Length: 217
Picture 1 (spheres, rainbow, N blue to C red):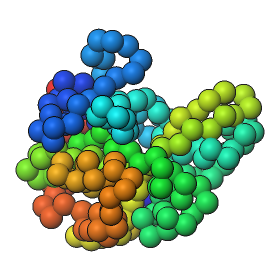
Picture 2: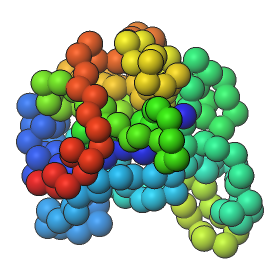
Picture 3: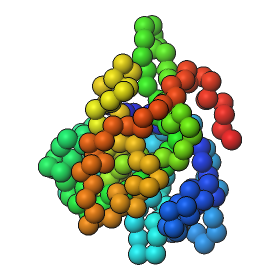
């Protein structure tokens, strides 16, 4: 499972990256550009930034990591399933994800993710990111549920795939999307099967996490 990732980029950098794809980024909660504080480690149930499609571009939204599907109407704490990851192999058919895959795909703003490997307690922690530093997003799905105690809750999940070249590090990896595939992932009419079966980025940089944990700018 992928349970820890990193988003340092701010609103201006996100807009700049999407400008290269000729996609405008909107922020619905206020008229001025938001000040997005860096999130060096994002974990399940944390609120984090995703980007979802809208008529005039993409909308930047804060959501809870750990998808609560639309059909859940009880207390939010009663949703016990581990839906922070969605396996690419079953995302079209799994009851918790199939509707979101058809109707509510999103991009998860990120630069890399964290894995643990080795001996000892705690295990050594590693940070995985594109070696060349190119912009990426993770493939995600989002949903909206009307819960009994928390009202309307918007949440998301990260789509994962077999790890390819990173199999020595972990048995799963996020579906990593290059910038030239962002628009296609958000286009609900576009074919995306090849994005779900592709290897992660060819060249990675795997670093001890302590080497990057203080680099928040």
